[in-house]
Length: 103
Image (cartoon, rainbow, N blue to C red):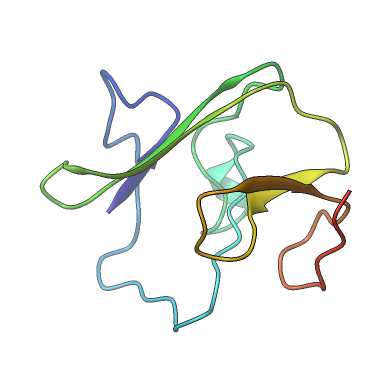
């Protein structure tokens, strides 16, 4: 699988290690800072603070999921809530895995 900030034109921008797994109800924290020397969870691109996109592709480069996001604020995360729904909400937490506090 691959993840990118450029769904059209560069779907395979950052590839995941083959046979990587996330257990059920688990998560994977990725840092889009462009610094792959900082560890395996650091992506080779940075996300725009103003607005942008994040896309996930399978091995055949078929789109699995896509998010277009608007302006971001420091210290605020955004995600689907409840988990697995189609509704996006803002959270006061910056780190995945902590109890959710809705804004």
